[in-house]
Length: 233
Image 1 (cartoon, rainbow, N blue to C red):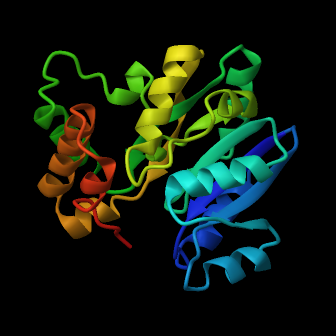
Image 2 (image 1 turned 60 degrees about the horizontal axis):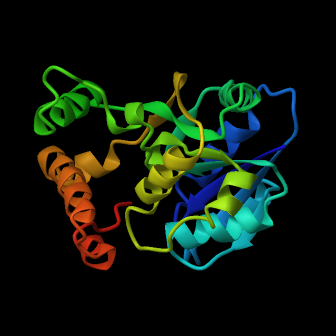
């Protein structure tokens, strides 16, 4: 069984859409959809309940929400999604295929719903990837926007996500890559929202991503880094 876990906080505008994206899957196996809600103050929970999916009332914070939902999930494969994703109807099938081939987890290639070329090119230039254009995900390092999937055994072995306010996905995928077989699924893509780039600015957003990753690797506290990366709705 695949447990699709929606990690959300105050996503009333998008929550119905991502549930429909998950419910449209052309999948021969079984699955469940769980909303891992971080104490939303809007209609996120009520709208999800109207769609008939399970709601887990979690501690706020993506790492806490993913850990709480993972413990409650019935599936032996966990797939973490965000409310601003658009999925192909073969997404579950692609995950199951890779697990059946012996991989323990991984993530998807992604594209932005608008300004994709501009954003991707900025990333190439600002990371100085002029000759080698491989992204972090090509190296087995995944962020939430890659749609991380993993077997429940891996989650339990690695003791879940480190409960830090930022970079929890990078930390987890780094540990997963070290101890398990991971794969990047190139097709189908996951389409993600460019809303942060549009609202906060393209250069600013890209610079933040690069700088936060560098500073985290240099040992700067995630609590300090999170103050520099405000929530965008």
